[in-house]
Image (cartoon, rainbow over all chains, first blue to last red; front, side, top):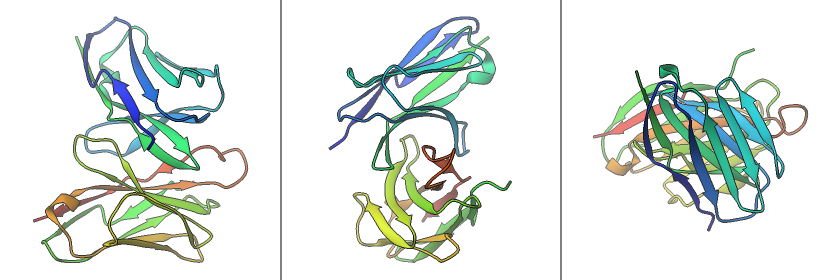
Length: 109
Length: 115
């Protein structure tokens, strides 16, 4: 059974600081996704990572994938309040997504 | 272009009742998947449909069923509702070829409350 573990589960950080969210998974896959979810809302796609060594950046967020280590990271640079949300990684096996438990990020002024 | 649409937005039912949730995929997308998200957890895969056929099923009881229509829209049915079925139900659509091939796009969800 595929297991996807995110850490930390809760993260409070000050504006302007950097931090990394980790996503470990237990089965070989070369497709991993990062989503953002605001309270009461649906999932917003952030990144699609399709190969070993893939790195994608959008604004203050950068995601990477190491398929050999079965690890993906979401790095936050110079956090701002607008980044406060819950972030999920999801591993794709046969187009069925298995999600991590999510990281609830709060950016404090 | 319209994204994935779901109806209704909110629904309140009582234990033992039945519910039907609806999803329309992005135009041109032929694959639809359903996910259940209980409060405070990540979404869990329920079903995947493509060309009106079930292509995948998650670890959910037989009370959960779904179907896909010729226009690729989909319905999720849940019978004999339990309190634990209270959740946000998300529909995702995916293209089977082209530039969007590797991405699933999620709808706004239907929030089901079982009393």
